[in-house]
Amino acid sequence: MTDLIDLEVGAPAHGGHCVARYEGRVVFVRHALPGETVRARLTESGADARFWRADAVEVVDASPDRVDSVWPEAGPGGVGGGELAHVSLAGQRAWKLAVLRESFERFASLDYPGDVLSVPAALGRGDDEETGLGYRTRVSAIANAEGDAAMHLHRSREVRALASMPLASAALEKTLIEGRFPARSRIAIAESSTGELRVLADGVPWRAGKLDKRPNAPRAVHEHVAVGERSWDFRVDAAGFWQVHRDAPAVLVTEVLQRVGDAERVADLYSGAGLLSVPLAEGGREVVAIESDDDGARAARRNAHAAPSLRVIHGDVRLSLAEGLGELDAVVLDPPRSGAGAATIAALADTGVPRVVYVACDPVALARDVALLNGHGYDLVDASAVDLFPMTHHVETMATFERR
Image: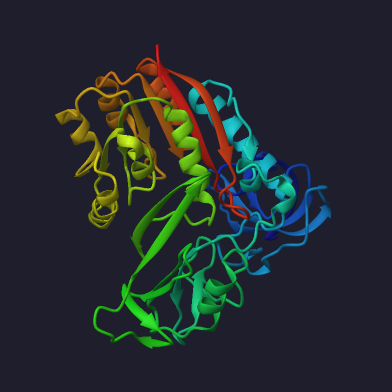
């Protein structure tokens, strides 16, 4: 059988591909759009396979949402990380909305009640300011044998040197593409809101193409987050977790503060470096932050110095809930991509907290946890999403639950 097949493309599915059928078999096809007719190259197939995978390499009948790819290196046969670079920005939001709706219907038996906004729209600026490029302030890569920054090809161990990184800020892209690094090292580059740029190679500070041998070579950056007339300052390791979109911290802080409302005692679960905990503690609100990662908990404690009413627990979220946190008015739940899961949701429900604010970067994991929360007596009262990851299939969703 030829490795090229003609497909009529169906709905988008979680993961950056669309669903098609070929002679009765499901094919997950990338680099296509719903409604298109494409010629696709099979990348994973077999008579016994439950489904096949393919890349669209020729468009026979194009969608009106198709545009010239802004990052051809992430196209068919290329690196991962830019799987929607061929889709208009409005089309990307429609794609992600369809995935959210399907996820909620399939895993939670509920309608997704919200929309997917652009970052400018979420901040009240208007979509016309959006380009979907140059937004990333964190990038990771791997050096090839020649020391060039490279990325893995999609679903492959093979790496390919990068000629561009249009999703990254200009300074970060220049540093990544023009830099030389130790062969096969893991590269992490961070640019802060205050203009600091840090490069790590295998976790070690790297400067001007060589090891930074300065005593106490800096590896942390300072972040400034402003919402209206209020602002907060953070210190985060260059390899530590921080939102990658330059405007994401302001978006998330705004959303969470609004959803928590007048709750006086709040737990911030999976708090990271304290992005949400510190603003929540402003004005004396009592906040307990829980983070299991060593570096994340250390950063949260450091950032909590400016918030006396914030207490940081370095420990497992589920065990901390089971041990007891006292009476809570609200919980902010911002779990890893895999979601909170049954055991943690059960422990959370046992606290009897009346309000849960959930921040999720994975629609399927969120929908599964929506079903779990519903089973424990929590009704979904509101949800909305913001496209914090243009050109990729990822989307950030905020949801509010009330105990019935």
